[in-house]
Image 1 (cartoon, each protein chain N blue to C red):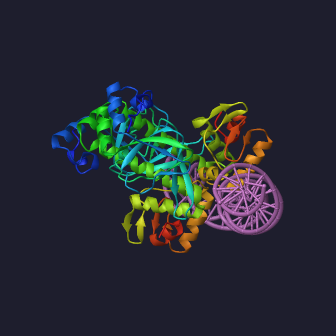
Image 2 (image 1 turned 90 degrees about the vertical axis):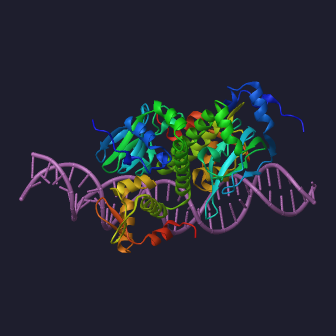
Image 3 (image 1 turned 135 degrees about the vertical axis):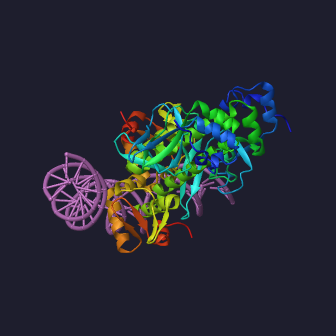
Length: 231
Length: 231
DNA sequence: CGACCTCTTTGTCCTTCAGCAAACTTGCGG
DNA sequence: CCGCAAGTTTGCTGAAGGACAAAGAGGTCG
């Protein structure tokens, strides 16, 4: 098996302060793996045996209710740690991770977590930054769900995806991973029908342009207005 | 100023593994403070200068939307750490903390955070446990808000408060801090009117008994059914 | 190339619940 | 002990959006 290239990790926040030799050591213990779109990386409730770092692609973190409904808790972008149950002293994964697009991730056994946080300055810091961000994002979503109408929530969800993963195309900014109406409904707590209606209306107004599984936002500022963000 | 009694901390999870001398040292650096019901302990967005430990009473952690609406993010019970922005590498408080009942808390300047987590085994562990629990609880609430009807959410909110703070009285289990209809509506993302109607109905059905600011749940099992929890 | 599967669109109906309004209860402060 | 403030109850109305239904549009695999 050939060695992984060090450039995979240099520049990523968790490792930015490390020596080349340290990165080499970390990398030698990593297991790289490719996931097809829709493939499951780990499952809610299962033993958290490894923690992960997304190198390329996008991951959806999903919870399933007793009633079988799915809720998309958050999206992971390249460079982010995920499945970091050990950071919370948990020994099972709190949610399921599914590749939203074809993805590449590294993973390490949880027993290395303590070693990493203890030895590598910046690693612990970065994981707690991540946790803090997620906590904040979840706060925001709770507030949205509790106070805002469906249209505002859907607008906010689009904006969030655009902010997190948007890449410039000629018509505007495209969300970098496949998204269906159903996916959006799972992020916003509504039905795919309502999402479809909203997107159709916005398409008519020239705010978005959407093909089957991809969405391009052509007028982000108008979405901001719709989302009811503070001015 | 007289010294604080060591028994305040012995037995609490963050300190359970410590020597008497260590507890003494921690305590000598703590600032105790009493808060009246409704008093603010810290405010969203302000510099996080201290972190806190609740000794007695109950704290509501609240977020305010741009529109001026309040959302109750969570309740803190005695023995819990709160305002632990440093654990997330934040330097401002992410939410506002208000005493739900007359409360007593200790606090320490954030500069001691690193020292505490480094020197006192169990302290770091406990704070990350706390964080993990909160993350999980927020997940649950997002799922509830996204998938469940108002009645189920209100039932779930009551159950959560009962679980967290319930004390046995002769008629059933009483929530240990004052709660108004408005408070419940701020936890569940509905209006105080709807909450009032639900409580009236449940009162008629003999599930709860509520006075002005206190609620006694007389038939918890029936609330569980209403909340739509999995069987 | 055709069949099938998934995702989308659009229509209609109907329930839930927010909004508004007004009267009522309870506790507290002067 | 009275008046006021804060919280509650309840009725009515209308709109938002969920549920159901059915047809259309890509995409993929044989």
